[in-house]
Amino acid sequence: MKIIGISGSPTAVSRSSWLLRHFLDTLAAQHGALNLLEPVRARDLPAQALLQADFDHPELLDATGRVAQADIVVIATPIYKAAYSGLLKTFLDLLPQDGLRGKAVVLLATGGSNAHLLAVDYALKPVLSALGAREILDTVYATDAQLPRHDTHGYTSTPDIDERVTRLATQLQRRLLPARSLQAMPAVIAPLAKRTAAPQHALPQGVRISA
Image (cartoon, rainbow, N blue to C red):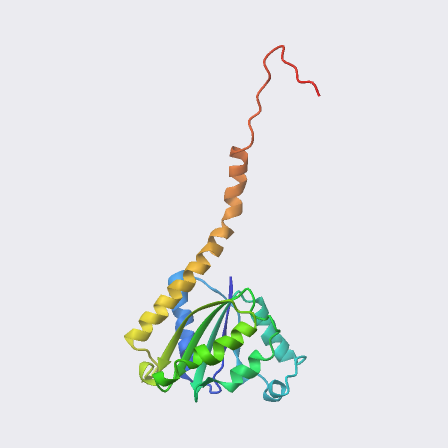
C-alpha cells in the first residue's frame, strides 16, 4: 500500500511537521519498509497557483496526483484559533470531490493547549468526509508542552505522546498486514490448485456412459 504525508504547516520547522515525521518513523519501525510517496508540503507549493486554485499548474497537478495514488493519507496540521491551517484548506480544495474515497486517513494535529482539541472533529473531519473519506483513524493531538523544543532534533515528544503515536501506528499496521499477506498469495494458490484438482478415476470394466 502506498502512503503519503501531507503537511499543512506554513513554517519550515514546526511541531506538526515533526509529529508527521515521528509518526511515519514509528510506523516504519513496526512494519518494516514502507511504500512512501514523496510528501506534500503545502508551504512549498507555488503560493499564487494555490491562492488562484490553478488546477492545471504542473506542481499542483503533481501534488494532487500523488494523493490520488495513495491508499493511506497522513495529514498533519497546526490548529490556529480553533481551526486547522488555512494553507491546508487551500490545498484540500484542489482535490476532486471524491479525492479521499477508498483511502484510510490519519490525522495529526498540534496546538497551544487542549482547548483546540475539538477543532479536529468540528472543523477538519467534516471537510475530509465531504472529500469521500469514510475511514478516519484515531487522531493524535499534541500541545506545545507535549512537543518541547530540542537543541539537536528541533522537537521531541513526551511519553504520553509516544504512547499514542505507537498505538495509532499499531492500528494502521493491522491494515497494512493484509496487503503484505496478499503479495505472497500467488505462490501459494498455484500449488493448492494442483492439490485440489478433481481426481480422475477409470470406470469399472464393462461400464459405459451414454450421452
